[in-house]
Length: 117
Image (cartoon, rainbow, N blue to C red; front, side, top):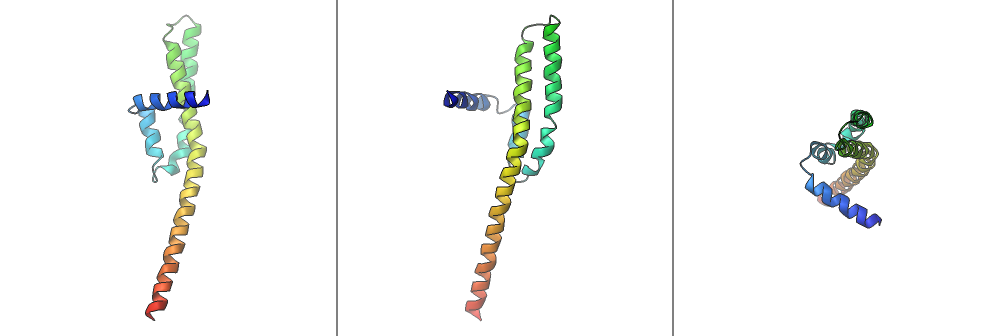
């Protein structure tokens, strides 16, 4: 069941890859954008407010298509809420890998200096 939901999510993401929130999340997933994961979590607040506003409109007799907007706003808010901690973990991993690469480069440079001396 989880696999089916995951596959459906990937297909919908592919269909909506040009949506503004998906473009922003794609930017955050880059090396330079990882530092913006936590501030991007703040975008969940206006999205949840929009969902609450649409839900109030539905409750007051608004059109039924607002249910789709509510679902979309909540989905986008959840994506931003999840992206914050995920970006921190990825950023920590990237920093660790970069530190290992720098350490390896220093050791290699020292070894080459020792050979030439």
